[in-house]
Image 1 (spheres, rainbow, N blue to C red):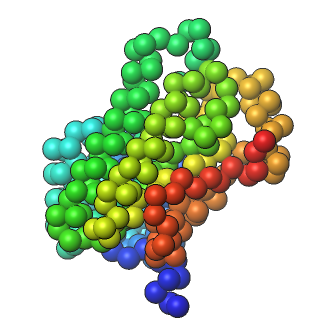
Image 2 (cartoon, rainbow, N blue to C red):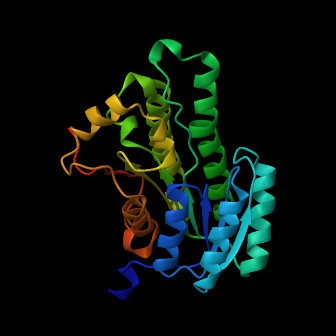
Length: 253
């Protein structure tokens, strides 16, 4: 029984440790991770503060900043992390994503391309690279993608590009999950509903009120409660979960 209780075994990696990503770093540490690498975008100061906080809790860290589509940079980062931690990364969570929230008739081809570049192409290239590396090195592990309920139930035309990208990401996750399951690699998605993050700060007030009325719990999620669920899925507690896109949305109609 003990081996199935939730615990993070081996070094972990969080791609995109801003917003919900920082809470996932904390949740992984709470689930027993003693080595955590994470990447950041533009906010180096926040990343350094998170690094200091995590190390104060007794967790070794390694941080960096690069485009997840750049698999050469990703490979170098993973090599560096393996040297720091003394073993390969076994748990990966990818939170990287963008959502511009633009009126439908103002959405351009360039904006659609930008959203798919990050949410689909970057997610695919980094996930495939990491899974392939795990397979080649005989590492059993888990990769969890932060998808979205928007990819299941499109919520507004202002996020048409985001919703479409998240639907594509979820299907891509299923394909990767089946491909790498025989190698002992679990790949899943966690699909949050509305969360109180900076990415949702651009949501117009009328849209926020409309969406809030649809949520059974009557509130947007706290990033920490979503992060706790993500950590569970990534942990030994989720050992029999393969290829699932798991919704956590507070009840939504």
